[in-house]
Amino acid sequence: MKKFIRNSILFCLPILLGAFSLFLIPLDKQFAYHYVKGECSDKASWMYHRVFEDERPVDIVFSGASQTGSAVIDETISEKLSQTAGKNIEVVNYGYCRGGRDIQYTMLKDLFHQKHPQLLVLEVTEDEPKKSHPVFPYLADTKDLLGSITLLNLRYFPSIWKGVTVRFESLRARVTNSYRYKEHGSYPPFGYRGSSHTVKREYINENAKKWEHRFSRQKPGSLRRIELSYSKHYVRKIVELANKNNCEVGFLYLRESGSNLKVPLLEEYYLDFGELIILPNEIFENSNNWKDPTHFNDSGAKEASEFLAPVLADHIQ
Image (cartoon, rainbow, N blue to C red; front, side, top):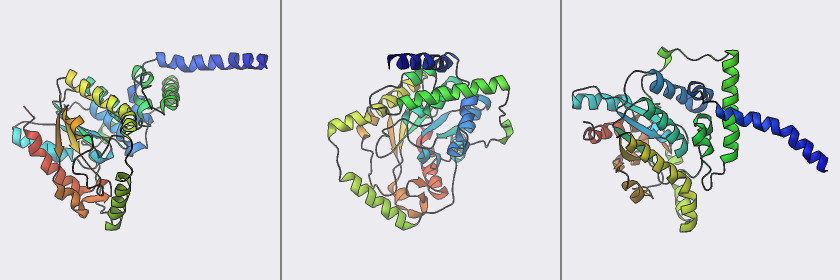
């Protein structure tokens, strides 16, 4: 038995050493952002293009999950702010599907390395996401990936393996020269991804019942603090990143259709870092503004964006 264990260790050791030696190679960001194709309508490859290849500046960036992606018409806000300011103001919708503060931190870190936004508007919903984003390990630098072993990150070890995978595939593509990227002109100029679909009222009612059930099951405060620790950790890192780059931070509350929660559960926590923007309740209550129970359609996004433009005008110098 001892001989078998020893031989198994000797067999696995070179494989493990080879895998982790990949972390010594800097992550190829262009490959990584294109490697997750098919995810979020290829939004990651657009984000790489907008930040690393597009020469336009970024003055205001909206960061969040798919709620941001379907609620903020960056082209509309850019046009209105440019008219108000008498100069060109570039707004970017950096919303990426599914919740996870770690992926937002990673993407914003790359953005701040290339651009110099004046204002970051960070999406908040009823509550903070509890888990790591599944795409985070594919885009994160080695230091950020290995350092994500904070309390209750249950995806840590699978994330390490994903980090190994993307680095191996990047190295293989470089050696074989087998990867091809889109032409620069094939990308849309703005990040908003809209929909003209309108949800059926019955789905909004079902969503409301789910929220009633969720609110009826209150968790102990100690458990809440543990669950929120990972997400809060990255909110602080995002704010610190923005402050380091002389960028103001604000928050935009984008709730679901059925929660009827007028302010987020962590309202006071966000207010310690910046202004909390809350859209008029009429936008949320109009069922014609929803693509599904959790995302605005074009109508809802238009109303939200027209409300946001004058609110943001005071923050642009």
